[in-house]
Image (tube, rainbow, N blue to C red; front, side, top):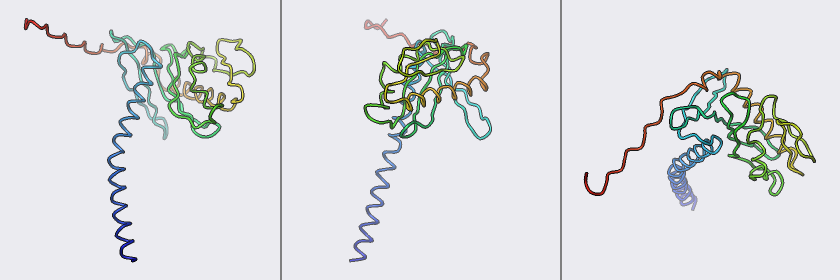
Length: 204
């Protein structure tokens, strides 16, 4: 009996290991797809992007420099992670090349309270960050409409989640501005290769 249990347990372990090893590449591919989609969402006008990396102390900083058809920079995107009310809130943030205004944000990850904090995913909340001044820092206010160009209105009943989004953005923007010179972001790149023309049906 004991031997049977050992054999069954061993086989189950092998099967589960095979399932996880098969699923892992799929999970990774989906994450990469979501990341790429988020970059283009927060950098409207971008047709391609260039990955820039720097190591600061023990931290690896990664930004995505968006470029249009001509190779002209349209902005820079980067992740902004930090604790929310229930767990990590992961964002993708788009910033203008002059570092003065945000272009847009997208929520990549959140575990906030359904119906309250998870409303940070709603377009109405995210739209507040489009064209929002990032210098001075982004601020949030409660129970009233924003009065300054760097302010957003917190979600009623979800102040902690709203505050977490703002803090995550400000921390990330500060790191990007401090470690990636504006001249590096504003520099034009080689334009992405044009799509090959389609052949005509007459063989010419």
